[in-house]
Amino acid sequence: MTVKWIGKRMMMGVVVLLVVSFLSFFIMHAAPGDPATAFYGGNAQTLNAAEKERISRVFSLDRPITAQYGSWLVETLKGNLGISYKEGRPVITILRERLPNTLLLFGVTMFFIIVGSVWLGTIAGMKAGSILDKGLSILSIATSSIPAFWLGILFISFFAVKLGVLPSSGTGEIGGEGGFWDKLRYLILPATVIIFTHVGIFARFLQENIKDESRKYYVTVARANGVTEREIRKGILHNASFPYLNYIGMTIPSFFGGSIIVESLFSWNGLGQLTIKSVVTKDFPLLMGSILLIGMLVVISLFIIDFLMYSLNPKLRKGGVQ
Amino acid sequence: MLKVNQLSIEINGKRIVDGSSFFVPRGRITSIIGESGSGKSMTISALLNILPAGSKAAGQAFFDNKDLLAISNKEMSAIRGSQIFTVFQDALNSFNPSVKMGKQLYEFSGRRIRHSVAEFHLKMDDILNDLGLSKAIMEQYPFELSGGMLQRCMIACALYVRPRLLIADEPTSALDTLLQKEFIELLKGLNEKQGTTILLITHDLDIVAEVADKMVIMHKGKVVEVGNVAEVFERPKNAYTKRLLESRF
Ligand SMILES: Nc1ncnc2c1ncn2[C@@H]1O[C@H](COP(=O)(O)OP(=O)(O)OP(=O)(O)O)[C@@H](O)[C@H]1O
Ligand SMILES: [Mg+2]
Image (cartoon, rainbow over all chains, first blue to last red; front, side):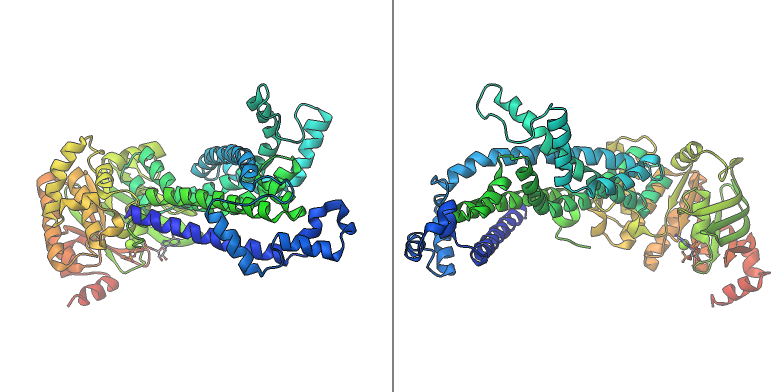
């Protein structure tokens, strides 16, 4: 049963990645501008028509899109993501340099968002009507409606420019002395921006689930018959975790989308910033590579969440009997 | 054992129960009967201090000389956890859907009277058997059982803990006649052998006639008649009671 479920999920993940890659390939080609000119950057005006055509032919840009996509797919499946137009290095090498930074930012922010929201949401939800309960409802709306880029700029001007205690941009010296601690210093501002704009709304969501669950009939029945408060709480939290996990799953794609902005703002050397850069430079192989990798991260995260839900919720496990 | 005096319940300003008074004598079976929506379940909720948010209860309800409507939450929890057991009307929703029945039944019964899990299994298997349930249900989840099965599970817990006061809100609504008979016998046994006081809410006049000593008739939020079952059946005073009794034949 479980093996079958995992197999099915993996198939779905592959299909999603295929659709995403095809759509991005298509959109990329439909976008205005021409990679041949972009390739020449500042000297683009000096290119004549014949030279443009030659570049197009060399990069096979004159073939039909579906054919181009087909060869990209075949090569990708062989593990070859091509060479970056701009950097002249294999795409896979560039992605490998960037991936750890994105994983670090994603891991650290997700960790604190989950820990913080579970902590806040649980206390607020379990004490319906308390100051914390009402306070969190207001605070969450306030923090989640602050745009991340605006908060980022505010942070930079305060902590980096005015106080000068934290670096405003970059990922730090990699491999240098104290490389990890150095990186951590650079991580603080972007991570704080993401955590601050997300933790409230996540906590609020959990809080509401807990309050809803606490009103369920079975809770009253248990309470009226002397079931220990500890057991009752455990039951409430267990059931309130299903919609919470579902919510995390639903926000993960937009979470990656949002981190693109924050990465760019803080020049964090991750996949998000790389994506923006390759869009601007029309570096197609690099763009496809980074989209594919981000897509894979999303698919894997969703898989982990689905798996958690599946193992926690017996209704899902027993084939969704209602 | 339980003396309810001028109990009124309001939910969001609407009066649901209006000045109801009745008495549940120790060691007897008392039955509350009345049409749907007459406030029977709400009366129970008020006694146990589990009314829905936005409701108010006034009056008195003495249980062992303690007014259930006036005592602290802590005292109430202690009473609910040691003196009274309640089988609720909606058995389908009485259990946590994501916890196995075995664990939940233990929390409702064995844990309450400080039995170990091993003792619990020993005793509960027999009770379930008497109620026509196999012990395999312990490994199942509530949504895998029928309403009648869940109802019997709750009844099993009541039989297990042998409370001083057992409140049962339409405990046989999802059971077929054969199982109903079985349950009535168990109820009688509990009352006669253990001396358990029982407050039984039902729609079924046959059950009242069969087991109850005293009856309370409710109509539109008011207690319209109280008395010994035999007397009320013989000489009903209230017009609604008369109609109710006539409908039986
Ligand atoms: N949560 C609630 N909020 C508001 N009104 C309610 C609520 N629950 C019940 N009521 C109202 O209270 C009244 C009494 O309901 P109650 O459940 O006590 O009836 P009952 O006698 O138990 O009926 P039944 O035999 O159908 O179980 C009904 O008129 C109902 O509309
Ligand atoms: Mg009822």
